[in-house]
Image (cartoon, rainbow, N blue to C red; front, side, top):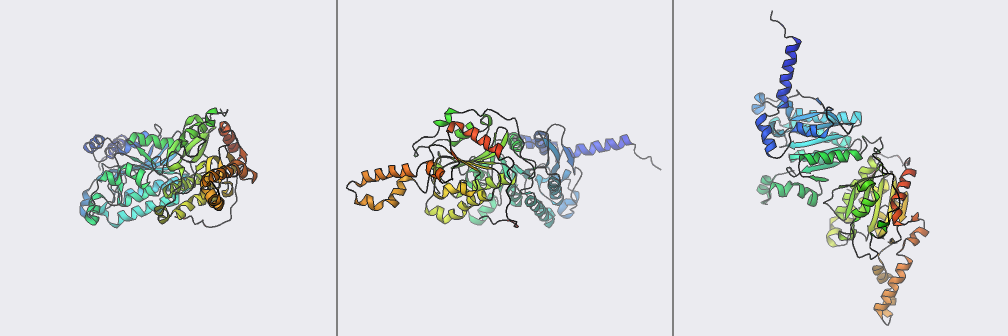
Length: 518
C-alpha cells in the first residue's frame, strides 16, 4: 500500500495550487495587462481593501463545460476573483473579473460566484463592489452563460436600496455585461475602458455608421452624452480612490445611518457668502463656491460632474454628518431644469433617501427649459421625476433659496409644499410664479399698451412686481419660508437643522410601491 501524503506534502500541493490560480492566465498575460496601463484583477482588490483583510472564496471553482474544446480549457477561478474585505475598517464584498483568463468572459460558474457575493452582501448588510473587465458572455457555454447573467441582474435588483452597489468599469464591458453596472448605484469608468451593448463592428454592419470604440463607449461618451456613468477615472488607481472616497460617505446598508467622520465644529459666520451671489439675476456664478463654504473643509464629492451640468449633485459633510447636496448651477444655462438635469437630480435624490442621507437643496432656478425639443422629448414626464423624488423622500430635507425660484421649478427644487422640513431664504431670494419681466407682460399687458410711454410704464410695473413678489417676504408671510437668513450664517442654520432633524421619522400609507414616472 502506497504511503499517504503527509500534511506537509498536502500543504505544499495546496500552496502550488494557489500559486497557479493566482497567476490567472499566466505571467505573459499579466504582463500584457500592465503594458495596457491596467492593474490585474487581484491587484485591484489589493489596492481597494485594507491590507490583510481580503478573504477569497471560490478560488478553486471552475467551469463544467465540455463543448467546443472547453473540456481542455484551463480557467483559473473561472475568470473572477471573489471574496470579502474591508475599506477603512468597514466590511464589503467584492468581485473582480480577470481579463487574463479567457478574456474575463462570463460563464455559468463565474456568474454563480458573483451572485454568491451579492447574496453575501444582502445577508450581511455590506456594500458590493463589482470590478468589470470582460469581453462579455462565454459563448462556448451557450444558455448557461446567459442564465448566469440573469442571476446577476436579478440580484442587482434585490440589492437595490438594500446595500450600496458600486461598479468599476476597468476594461471592456460589452453586450449583456453592461446591464449589471446599469442596475447599480454608481458607475466609475476608467479611460482604458469601453462599455456598450453592440460594438462598432455590429453597428457598422447593421446601420452603416462608422464609430470607434472610444467614441461609442469611452468614458467621455458615457459621462457627457449618455449620462450612464457617475465618475471618470484616469486609471485603475484613481478608480479605486474614488470608490474608497464614495464609500466613506455611505452607510453599510439601508438600516444604518451614514457614518459621522471627522466633524468640523466651526460654524461661525462666513462673510464671503454675502457677496458670492450677484444681485443681478442675469449674472451667473459657480454654485460649487457656495457648496465649498457650507460643507466641512470644502470637501465635496461631485457626482456626474460632466453630465447635465445645469444641476450639481454630490456628497459632503456638515459637522461630520453626510449630506446629499442638490444645487442649481447658474453658470450653465442659468441653472434651468431640463430633461437630463431632472433625471440626474431625481436619481440622486432617490439614492440618498434609500440610504438615510439628509438632503440639502440650494435653489437658484429660473424654471424648466422651454423649447419644442424639450416638450417632445418628454420634459413633463422627466420634470415630474423631481417632484416625485422629493415628495417621496422621508429623510431630513433642508432647502436654501439663494436667488431665483420661479414657477414649477420652485416646487421641483424641494419647496415647503413638497415636504421640506426647513426652508431658509437669503435676502436675495426671488420666489414667484415667474420673473418680473415676464409677469408684467401677462398681468399688466393692457396698462402697458395704453400708457403714453409703454417702455417707461413697463419698467415702473416691473419694479412694482419685484417689490411685491420678487422677495422672500411674501413666501415667508405665507409660511412657505421658515426664516430669512444672513447668507454668512447658512452653514450654522443647516448644521442646527440637521441636529434637530436627526431622529426624524415619517409614516407613509402602506403600499407595494409608488409609480415614479420613468
